[in-house]
Image (cartoon, rainbow, N blue to C red; front, side, top):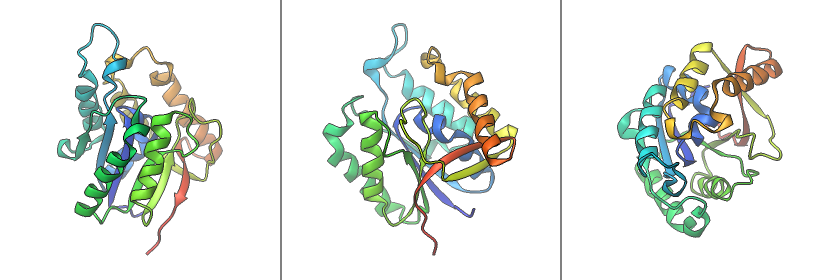
Length: 211
């Protein structure tokens, strides 16, 4: 693995950490520069008692825990569950970014089989914009009716702990089962068992570009 410049596409704040938080931490530890693009702060879904823009604050804190530079976190405010209505605008944002960062060598996206309309939109537009690059899809098992475990990334406990601690920054989302420490650690253990290591994350390989 020799990825030097990585772009993570998150339909909503927290998706990137949930699907690839351990891998992101490992990439940064190994010297890669990671960029993180979140397309919706889901203001319409924020629970009562929290500021409407709380997820913007939380994603900055969460990605900082993983080691992503603040200036590498790009946040958009498209309406949740309606990203498919603005897919051309999203594609243009991705192409604009690519023109300035054509040396991206790995793109991390949701699965194209993800049943959430926002997730599938970001996956397809990400592939469209970065089709010549290596592309891995991360796992969000509550939205994946099928998922091809084609690539496994071995994680140390420190990577798993960073992922857990990053997700703890989403205090407004703490009621969600898939944000619990038990779930995150259990999934990392289960994928590790499949791979013959202690902890792992798994990915679908959309494209592997070797130059």
